[in-house]
Length: 154
Image (cartoon, helix red, strand yellow):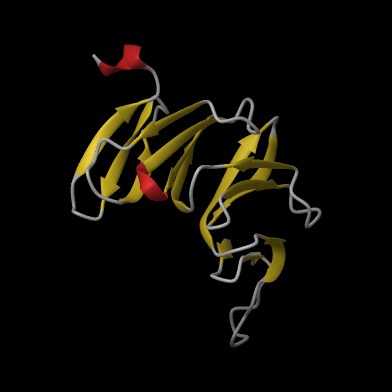
C-alpha cells in the first residue's frame, strides 16, 4: 500500500509483513516531491513494477522503490489533481483543466495533452478497462467520455 501526503512524502506499507495488532503502524518513506502528493498509482512496464506519483510540484515521477531517486520524471503543465492507469495508459488530470495521456511504453514523454471538455475544475479521471479512453469528472458533478485516439470515438 502506498500513500502521499501534503508535505510531498510518499510512504509505503507492506501489508504482508505489518503486524495488525501493533497500534499506529506507519509506513516507510520511499519517495519525495517538492510539494504535496495528490496521485499515487502502481504501474508496470518492461515487466517490472513501479510506483507513479503526481504532485503539486507539477511533476509525475516514477520510482522503482529500491532508491529514493526517481527512475523517470515528467513535467506537467499544472498541479496534479487526479491520476489513473490501465495497461499502458496513464492519464493525469491537472489544474487549469489540462489532461495528459502518457503511453507507458515510453513513460518519460507525454503522448497527448487536451483541455477537459468540462467547464469547471477536474476532480477525477478513470481509465476504461480496455485503455482506449477515460472518463473525466468535474467539481460541478458532470462527466465526459474521452478517447485516446479519434478513430475510437465512433
